[in-house]
Length: 469
Figure 1 (cartoon, rainbow, N blue to C red):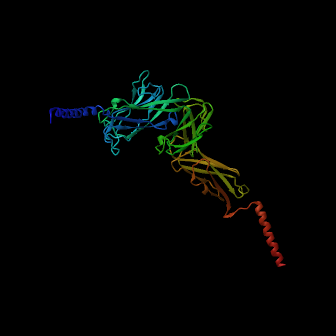
Figure 2 (figure 1 turned 90 degrees about the vertical axis):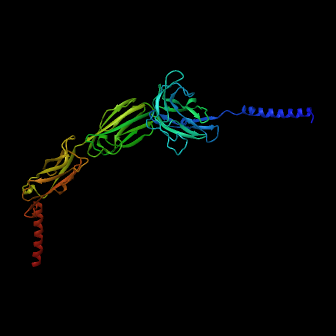
Figure 3 (figure 1 turned 30 degrees about the horizontal axis):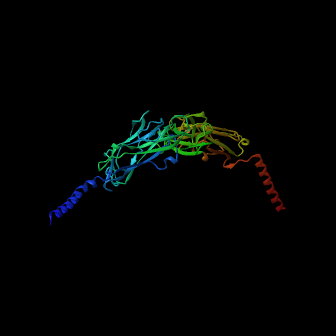
């Protein structure tokens, strides 16, 4: 092979070698940057609902990772995220405060997120911290900052988890009847990192409509004798929704099972055009109710009905909070004892007069007294005689009853007071004592009875006489 041919072959090899040496550099220059995507989203239907001042609002945040270079086994760690409670606009995490009073419901937070990305692992733990978030300008925005105690929330590529909590709008800024509440959730670039070393930020605006056209009524219960029994209370209105609501509550001092108060809510109130009343139905037996109506926090009303023994009344109400305190004290018990006379008392020289003693057990002589035994007497005069046992208060948790015994009976007079034994000490109870008059075991006859007896005997005699004749 001559030199010129060999030189040409070496030249071709050199070009090929040079191409082989340069190829990796050209390929490496074309490699795509590492991927590290973060995902966050709020409730999808939040903007389609109308919420009210003071009502808990459920917030569910979905957060996690999108594509991460390396495949499905790669992950994103979130070290901290922030939920701004009240924004001017929905543009960014550093939004300014809109002036509304928005808070988180304490103890409402929960999550499905884990520290290792395994859904079967225990969820991360955290305590939401409410603090002012640094705004871009203007006032500080109230925000919830969540930092997992385990160090991070981990999600593998294209997986998500959820964090749930509740917020409440306590008061809106300005005097408009409806407001749009803007909030923002997310984290900055330094608060989340993929396992390939890349960082990722994320953010999601949230918006919902709020109405102040709502009235709330707090109803409390008190038994002056600390009765533990439940009572049913009812709210009725001529406008708003719902028109009628009922609940069962107890006196907290009584130690009974149940709620010691109830908060009724009436929505879509047309201010100044709605009247409402609250009362207990039925009134517990043996008690007398007293109603006290008042304004609550931020409550505004055209007028409030003073205690009238019938209900808590609210007239021409506007939005806000109202209160109704219902107090029950034991009512006095009155038992009527009637007297019935059988026989001709007056024609036989006996006056229509009688006396009886009564004894009541497990009763009080005053609403705030102590339970025991109380004695008294009754007097009956005339054909339609009656007398009452009064001045006693029954024990609603006991067995209160009364016995009535007639005394000072004269010779032929017999008394039947069995109907007046163990009479329940309940207001409105009645019983009857029957008095009869007898002579030597034979009931006495009036003059009319004697005349009839004489005619009967005469008739029998005439019949017998005619038979003999």
